[in-house]
Image (cartoon, rainbow, N blue to C red; front, side):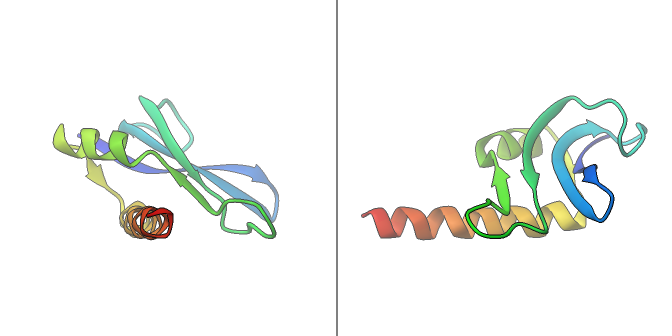
Length: 90
């Protein structure tokens, strides 16, 4: 089964996560199929907290991929942010 989940990076006490598409049997930081974004929980200032390719996530969900709980909440947040940005631009 294909999953969309987080893989950890960053330094000690400064987590940084890539949002990846991977086989559910692979290790957390193991092999991945595609990187679709990132999540920076300790972002401050002008740093982006979430960067996510919504189109690619929709594609993989259409192919049968399952989102992890955290990625599902980040996806909803990214969609909401994109909608508000488009509304502000119009």
